[in-house]
Length: 391
Image (cartoon, rainbow, N blue to C red; front, side):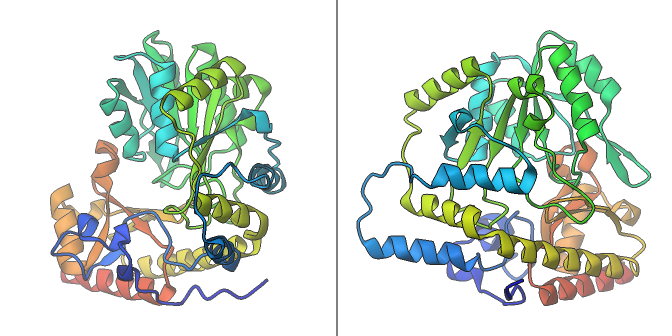
């Protein structure tokens, strides 16, 4: 495996990186450990920077079509990596995954309709639902013995309501780190098909799975499940190119696809970014060794967190199966959400994502991004241990 230096410390304040910006950290938090925003502190694969540099050297950045190699690179990646044979005719472009989610809500539900979510879950789901005049219908995950499971009985009851039209699935799940099994997804799919609930699946973390766990694309469960789905994909998380890529919406059902394509046209969501195109194609064609190395490094960081938290019994790690985001249980500290945030910032020097941001089920928890140099993570864990001891 090629050598990549993930221990390299790169000053992300040299550019307006969101996770280091006062918009996220606050004016008083610029020196905190930035463990919140879900991107990596790793230099991207050399193939990506080379592709961008080559494209920049051309010197002309007028309107462009989709490069001939981009879609084959994408379909080849998913076929080789995940056994998913995506029909190119089913692929639509979009600016980002959130755009795809919002468009699906508007196209395939009506104002006032219920959209099921499974909290604690990615907070933008709630924003998209509210901002588009729909109702969020909660099917909370069940935390039992340190492991999250779906509440299928509750899902069945909610799906049976004729005013519930859609579910936002997070596969793999952000923030609890579950990589849903084929059996779990099959059961969810059967419930949704039985009650006419469309599955809109955010699969942006698809490639980030930990040893012993395998991502199952929802659309591969069965042809019936595929036809009852809209799948949202992007290489943003896998290759750390969130600021330099776009997204793809897989819509297997022909009628829904035509509707989605017409809305893309109506909103003129049809321009291509030259640098995003070459970055994504290079990532999918040549980025595999880099991603494998990243996954190994993240596994090493996870091992470090396990080791260090064994010395801090008041903080419990919910064992992750995927993503580079850890869901930490701070409830033994006995702090209310605002007090927990203040403690982590002021005493531990941590700026992580508040658990309460993912819904009431997240109270007492926090989401920690471990895709950073190990030395920095180790220092942050030192600070946490000292703060908890003092508390």
